[in-house]
Image (cartoon, rainbow, N blue to C red; front, side):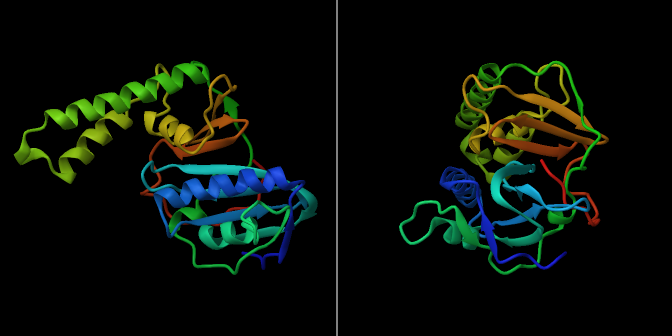
Length: 234
């Protein structure tokens, strides 16, 4: 990966605050979370920063972008906590300018990012309110089935089995698993009344909203080998 720039200038403080909120949600699921940062590409700097993270509870990639005030070239994997601290500033409010923390050794997923292009729309995606209702029904089902377990079967393994069964179900007539919708809602991407789209490129699926995207491979992320990826805009 290229050596990261030291300073990033967001277009305004609101962009930094939204990025901070995303990082805080990632850290809620994994206090040791890392993120991969990308800006610019082979055609030159671009005025947008893409931030990739992987909340372990959902087994998906979460992508948040921020508009930049100054174009930069950047490709680095860093600590989400250190990045959040840098953006927060001394008063805890997102600052439009922040320093990129030092790079860390990235986990395997950081080398397996979605493709730059080739995305096509897939039909059949319900609206945001319907998707949120589907997630609510799945959560209620999990709780009900968990409560019905006899004491001798009330184990982590059994609860994980029930969770995998529920969250691996497809959403309506689409190939998108419910866990991707759950992740979008939990990370603040899927909000009442907002537009959403389902896209596909090769084996990748992507749930996109104005607040961020959830991406995953239909074969899953766990079995992927690490391959270099080029900086790209999401």
